[in-house]
Each structure stands twice: as structure tokens, then as C-alpha cells.
Length: 608
Ligand SMILES: [Zn+2]
Image (cartoon, helix red, strand yellow):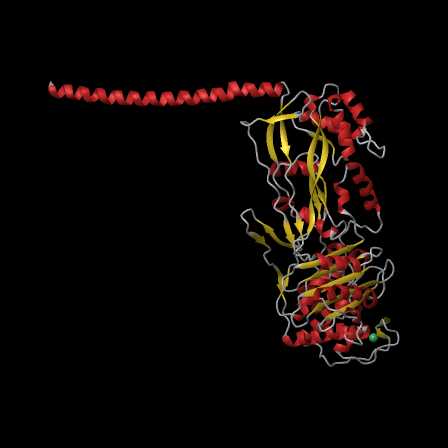
């Protein structure tokens, strides 16, 4: 019996323990349930009452956009404070009356701020998103904001919001590289909203670096909080136990651009002329200056919508197309700047000899039934390769081209980066075109044109192909140095929140396969162009070994284009410059002086 009693006791103790255990869990569960009920039902009804009684709204705190700096820390794009007038639809009591009151508001010039059609659109949008403020006007002048604030009791549903806007302190400086902002389009909105939390009326980068580095670098994360509002929709305080998100500023980027060099390049390039300048470091692809002319002021795209649309129309219909970035999308026949490709192909394939003089130049060359002219009607006489490049004799290069053949010329052109995008970190770039027999026949099939050997003569002197100024800046480095052809880029680094830097990872377009001997000859030829007797004397820099090549490209639409590239020091170039001036005549007299000013600033030396 005793044994049994003991057993019962043990059983009882076990049962007790397990009941206690169940009770404990039941109690815990009830507590959780109670808390849940409290939050969901009691507090929840409090919030839904708040929202039903229009006492609560979602407030978006706009994140400042990251700034853009040059390589030395000069700020090229920043934020400035601005005001927006927005609509909270659920606070509106009489839509018709409110719209009429708004349309009567005028700025200091006597112009209205709101137009009927836009107001109607925005009211329609606001109705669908009742608790979110919908922007009616942005970048509103302070005098208008004051008027609205004074009459806010007559404008139920209207609120004034603080915002920041993009500002470019140097106006047109580097505008095509920096790009500009625009209001998010209806199409983009649908695709971007899901990932990046955009709102109607938001400004986004739509061109240039502003577009390229929009996400991850420039755009921040907007803050979100629910706020109590009074009867007029004005904020009283934040509601703390509702979900919220802290505002996070955009990281910002530092560019490879050098402000001083950029400024000199822009001042050297007359705004009345069209064209482009690119200066870069052939050792790593850093773009030091990028100019496209004519320029525009990107500030106009962040002004009030009224000003914006007026300027936009003017820029869009300007026949000179100032919004195009000619540095990366402008395509031009390279003219004589291409002769180094022809020379490199002939020399490196052992097809021509540096001392070979061919038939002397008497101002023209007879091939088949056609006469091909030299730019110099008096002729150049008999020339070797160095002098052929120095004087830029067409007759000499017709013969180099015929002997080398189009396949090698096209092959070397591709090796130097022509006929393909450089991959520069901008959304806008054109590939250009290098024609050989096959691509020519394909291209002109519809017109019934067939490649003839005469085409080689044109190709050898840079007619028929088209290249971009950035390609023209990237190629000279590859002629003289024994290394890779780098992808040109504008991104230098972006600061991380932990203080570290995310730097550009060097990327190559390909490797240059030139014999040392070929390179030595090309260096001599490039140097001879800048030396007395050459066509590029205006790019001379005292005590720096500079090389270059002029070009004058025939333009079927008008006057010839002037081209020029230069680089230095030839032994180990750290800068290469390409200049294209549309319809301006000779490369030596128009484009070379612009490059000269940039090179002398870079080397901080006088010159011609
Ligand atoms: Zn000649």
C-alpha cells in the first residue's frame, strides 16, 4: 500500500505540474490577446475615428537629394529650400468654390499660379488618394505663399509644404554632364513607385548624371509619419505609435570633373558655336572636362511649372538643339584626325614603311575615273609618314589606305574604340559607325550602292565614318601608351554612411595591340603636328611634350567641321583633349586654340 500511496503522490504532483503549465500558457496567451485587442480594436478604433473625423493624415518628409561635387570638392548641384501648395482632398468642403478662389491668386507679376485644367486633373487625383497631400503648385514664390498663409481659413484642404529643390550654383556649367530634373511621368510613376516609393509631382533625374545616379546615390529615402491635424488640415503633432520612417538624405557623388578645367573649357568654347569638348585622363578614363555647346541652364527645370513649360518649349524647338549632349551623342566624320588609325594599321601590319613616300602630292590624286583632291591645292610634294601626318596630306593617305586595305583600317578603328559605345556613365551615348565593305553594302542596299575601292580613299582620310567627341578623346591615349583602353567615366566616388568611399572600379574597353616600333613612329608624328611646320601649333605648351592632330570634316549640310585632338606628355600622357566645332572651318585655326587653353591650364604653363 505504502508503495501505491507514494505512486499516487507522484502522479498527483505530475498532474499538478502539467496543469500549472497549461494555466501558465493560457494566462500568457490571454495577456497577448488582450494587448492585441487593445491595439487592434480599442486604439485601432481611436485611429480610425481620427481618420474618419479627418484628424489624421500621412505626412511625407522629403529627403534632401545628394549633392554633386567636382573632384576637388566644389559643389556643382545642391538643394535649396522651396514651398509647394498641396491639396488634402478630404478637408475640402466645396470643390468648385475652392478652385475658383485658387484661380484668383496671382504672383507679383500679376500672373495666375493655378490654371483650370491642371487644377481639375490634380483634384481628380486627390480624390483617389484622399489622405495623401497632392501637389497643386511647386516652387511657389514667397509672396504667394504669404498670401495663401494669410487666407488659409478660406482655403480648407489647402496646405503649404516645405520642400527642397535642385539648384546648380554655376548655372550652365557642365550642364550636359550634370543633367537635369523633371517631374516624374505617369508611366515612370507606375514602374518606379513599387520599388522606390515615389509620389505624384516628385522630381526625378531625367537626363545626364541626375538620371544615371538617381537611385542609390542621389535620391534619399523620404520620411513618413502620421500627424494629427486641425480642422483646416494643418499639422498639430505627430502620432507616435503609428508606423513611421526616418528621412534619409541622398549619399551624393564626387565627379572626375575638375571645376577649373571645366570652366576654362567652357570659356574657350564660344556659346554662339555648336560642338563639344572632352578632356580625360588616358591612364584611368577620368573625364576632367565635358562641354557641349550650346548650353542650357538646368535650374529652369526645377522652377515653378509655369516657368518650366515656357523654357522647355523654347529649348525643345531651338534648331541648335541645346538639350543634346554633343560630347557623347554628337556624331561627326573624324576627318584627318582619323589618319592616325590608317597609319597605325599600315605600320603595325608591316604593310607600309615609315620612309615610304609613294607618289608625290601635286594637289590631287587620280584613282579610276575620279580625281581625289588634297586639301592643299598647291600640293605637298613627296612625303614620308611623319611629314604626311604633320602636313595632313590627303594624297599621301589615299595611297596608305589603298595599300593597307579597308579591313585592316576598320579593324584598327574598332580596336581604338570607334564604332561602339565607350560605356561612359551617362544615359545618353551614340556608338558611331565605321564602315567596311560588308557594313557599307548592308547599309546602302536599299539605295543600290555597292562598295567600290574608291571608298577606301575616303575612309583613309576619315570621311564616311562617324565618331563622337568622347571617342575622339579616348583614342589618342591608345596610340601612344602600352596599355588598355579605359571606359571613360564621370563617377569618382560616393561617400558611404560609415565614412568609407565607394570608388569607381576601372573598366576596360579592350587592349591595344601595337608594336613598340609602331608606337614610336606614331609619337613622332603626333609631336610633329604641334611643332613648327605642323597644323596644330596653337596647342603648344611651353616645356611639355604635346602631340595632336587636326581635322577638317566635310559636312554635306553646310560649312566644314573643325576637329582636333591633343595629349601630353607624350611619354606618359595624363590628359587627352578632343575638340569639335561645327561649321567652323579648319581644325588647326579653330579647334586647336581651344585645346591649347585647356592644356596650358592643366599643365599651368604658358604657350603660344
Ligand atoms: Zn597633299
